[in-house]
Image (cartoon, rainbow, N blue to C red; front, side, top):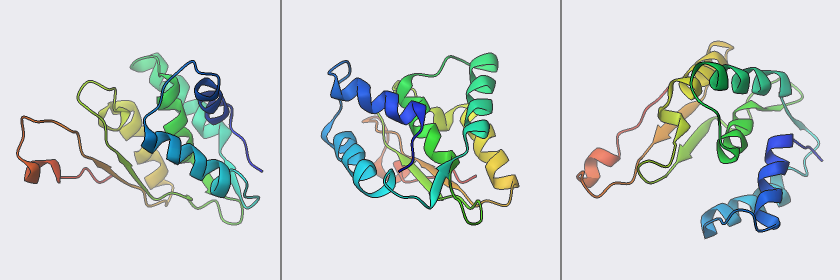
Length: 142
């Protein structure tokens, strides 16, 4: 079983009732606990994650627990060859929700992972009622 302090902290916040989550996030946590966090062939690159968090909080803004939770999975790697477990990330959030994918620290972090011969694709589809649906399908690929 694998663990990460930010993943564990975020799940604990929800289970103790300190934060509320929508049904999709609850389903995500159930999936992660059943199928991902129980695996022995994966690990979180704690050093790179901590470096990213220090970088973001020093040069941009303090990260919220949900941002650290999602960021941890950028650094979830296979033990065998250090390849990324997740190669694509899709975050759907309303305007003003703090999507770090659109922020410089997350783009920088993903760029470093890509330069380390890892292929990561991020798609950002913000939800807004002011734009036509076809514009929401545009993606940002790193």
